[in-house]
Length: 184
Image (tube, rainbow, N blue to C red; front, top):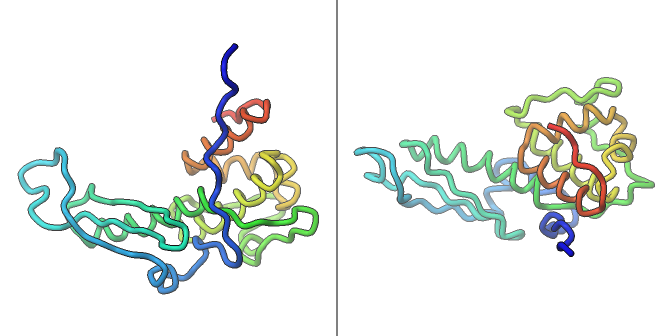
C-alpha cells in the first residue's frame, strides 16, 4: 500500500494586512537585506562584486535570494519582487468564507466575472495572496473560491496559473484531498 500524496507545506498564518500587500517602505521595515557573492557558474565577471541579494521577511521567516544578474541594483529589484510572490504563495490570513468580501483592490481589478492582471504588474502579488487565502480557506475548492471572489473559475485558475509555485501548491492541496489536479 502506498502512502497518500503529501499536501502542500503548512501555511504561515498572519493577522491583519497580508505582507505582500504592504507598501515598499513597510515591507522593507519588516525585512532584512544582505548582500554577498553567490557561488556557481557565470563567467569571468561573476562574483567580482557583492551583487547577490538575500532578503528575509522577519515576521514570517520567508527568505529569497537573487544573484542571477551582474548588477546589485537589478538583483535587488528581482529579489523584492520574488519576496512578494513567495509571501503571496506561503503566507495566509484566516478568513471566514461565509462573511468574506473581496478587497478594494480586487473589486477595482475585477471586470464583471473576469480578473485581468498581468503577472508582471505590481498588483499581481496582493491579488494572488487574496486568491490563495480564499482557495485555502475553502479547502482547495477552486470553484467555491471563485464564487466567493465573484469571478469565474477559469479566471481564478488563470490568475493562479501565472505563478507556477502557487499553481503547484493548489494542485498538491487538491490531490491530497482526493480531487483531480487542475490542468495547465
